Image (cartoon, rainbow, N blue to C red):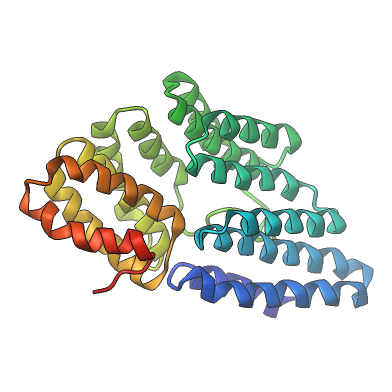
Length: 294
């Protein structure tokens, strides 16, 4: 188990720097290995093995979404739930709803995002999963333009995610960002039509993302650039999005490209500016192929 746990932790680190399609086969192999081992294990170890298999399967689902395959993402998330249920770890089924809400969020489906997030909070008492669900609920309210409901959900998320977890449990959700609620707040403020406030929060919060968290930093920087463009700072948006394009060359991300498409539309209004004209071909290439050609 310590060896498999190390592989899981290293896989999450690799997921920050390489294309998801390259990582998925390895994740599937580890999931299947643990699943095969479980029936042969002692009863005391069986639940721990299946729980870790479920975590591998859940992360496989996230990488499938990053690869642009929402169908595979949900299949692997459902499989993670089955493994978790077999292990007696019922909270992961609630987390699957949070994952599903992420898919609807990127589709800008506010009602389903809020509904799935609330359902997740009803199905578990696990503080971390409830906190992640409340954060996703806030993002759904932001898409719908409901400022007060969004801030209430963000407050709940912050309180819940500050509750210490069990030391021997793998971290559910992001393991690279210490303060995800602050970044989610900036994300929500942009969707609520307050890009100036979003820019200010992003400016400070992104600097605190660890240097090795390339995928996470690229995701929030893309959203930061989108907020900058919305405030009329097209030149600075072009400057800040440069490392995002470089990150996409190493680790493709379908979810990041969602915001880059919106950024391209926003920058089109400032096509008369030299920085925008210079960036446009590279941005279009990254959006067309998913791979940046230098």
